[in-house]
Image 1 (cartoon, one colour):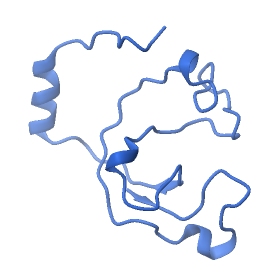
Image 2 (cartoon, rainbow, N blue to C red; image 1 turned 90 degrees about the horizontal axis):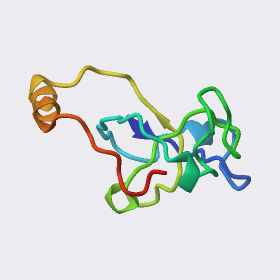
Image 3 (spheres, rainbow, N blue to C red; image 1 turned 60 degrees about the vertical axis):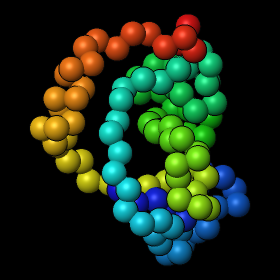
Length: 103
């Protein structure tokens, strides 16, 4: 995955420069959790709905771990299977409990 310069705001770059890479390659693991109740701006209420930025999907990132200058940028990615090591680590954790911030 790589972030591009385009963002979901009016001041976002346009044209070819909007699709230029704004970061090096990053690898992410996606968990399917969206706290609509506490985050209605970004999280659609139901599958298939759009959020206030007109997007049906989004990912939340820990801002402190993102490359410098990345702030809600769009990104391009290619799905890949998780390694056996990661699968084993996830399996050993068992079932996730409901986080305190979820309604």
